[in-house]
Image 1 (tube, rainbow, N blue to C red):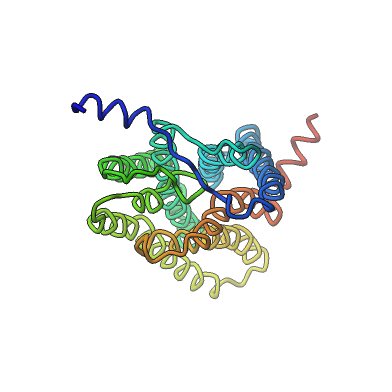
Image 2 (spheres, rainbow, N blue to C red):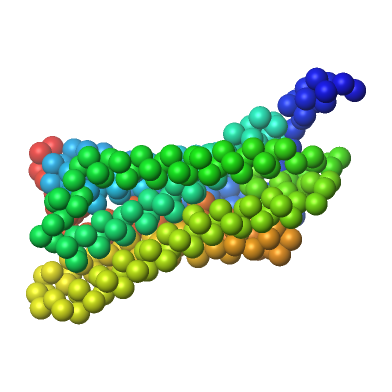
Length: 311
């Protein structure tokens, strides 16, 4: 077969997403649970985006970045969950080569973007608590928009690098991906050649996008903790704990599973364990973020009352 023939055969090939087919008795239950979480994600994150847009009191850097996070979570879950629901519902569990490539690119791009965005959000909280007199200068709207652009561009650039190198790797005869979506570690397991270079590249860039943001986030909260200990106002303390506590909870729910998946070589992961960890950060975490930020947040509750009052 000539090179063109090989290229056509590759592009027309399909992958089988094995997902949770080892537990057929769980598939219907998983379908119902995942669908509920997905609907919660859609409703909760759309609610935050619309509320932040409609209420002028929420036109602040914190809610600008929170709206970005909500939009990011909507895109992130939609890049993999509808395909998973289709696979759980029926016997057909295939995805086209091009569909797999697109899914891999967007899942990785949006996940990388979220790491950087959570770091930027922690800097915003640091500036608000530790530099209150300079906050409006430090977090100027133009600077906030620049930070948001950097988050998105860095995430999509990182994904382009990994997607390119992953799909250059020749695959073995079978196309059975032992996962519920196209992910780099799962696809590398299908390779016919040594993939240590790919695994090393993945670990290095994952360290950059996971460990460095996490270290900077913890450093920001170390400075915030020192500032909080010097506070004497009870109202100020409650506000700091309300916003910073919510962000720390979101950071924990996102970074801990990400480290379990991406900071070790694919061969070091239990496949079943990896699937359920991935299910947590792709399904559960994005649905909990709106609840975490709204239930303990006076600003959001006030915005809802004002919106209801207008209606």
